[in-house]
Image (cartoon, rainbow, N blue to C red):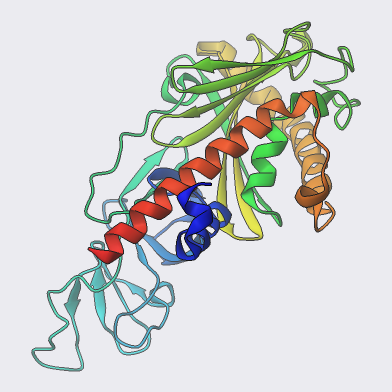
Length: 348
């Protein structure tokens, strides 16, 4: 029996982390277009966060709580490098430090870090935040898959959707290649291929691949999970030639927890194209393909949001579920380790 099942506090903290999302990772929390000069409040991984841009366009992220009386800082004013609380004007900068308390001279809060701040990266049209167990620790490097990292040779579009399910259901869905041949059987890209398959798990330097052994390059035939500072999923779907230049169509996805019962999914639709071919593909995507892709995504959403309330407790897994079972064990183990680290940090 593991320590997490013996210690009630550790068990409770493990469950909280598993339900609200693993820490010590970069998570996308908003599309770039959503964050402007006006403060923007979000809930991610169960934490309330205020985002805004300064005069140089740099994004800042801090806990959405005024240290004075707890009002939402996202309701306040953007003063450039800081937010001013709407309630009493307390000014807090991007590091969570109180810079001014206008109503009081020489207030003890001034100059002190009173609320949590988040390291920020803006990549590929999304805002990523580092959610660390230890707020003083240096964040890991965020290394994105080549479809997002190599902008010279790859074109991509970001799709963001809010789902009323725990993020683990979204991860399970992508780790299940066989559902493409059934749920999406009449889609423009997944209508081909066998409805039976032998499956296997294969380790990679950054995670694992779950794939069909008897079919490749026909349907949704493989999926990869990678951990390179952020936990991402990647798959490819062959495209018919009439849908524009380039090879297979790739999807790189993140499932960002909002709270225990909601998540936000980020799917980059990617194709290896450059020059005039990229322009052609982007035209085809906007005018023809985007609506078709949304239809497929909404099929997943409907199924997941209408799952039986006790779906996980009453499910019967078989061979095609080996990939999602492996990922579930990984998430459980990681949550246990992080719960131990968090409790040790609190006790120090």
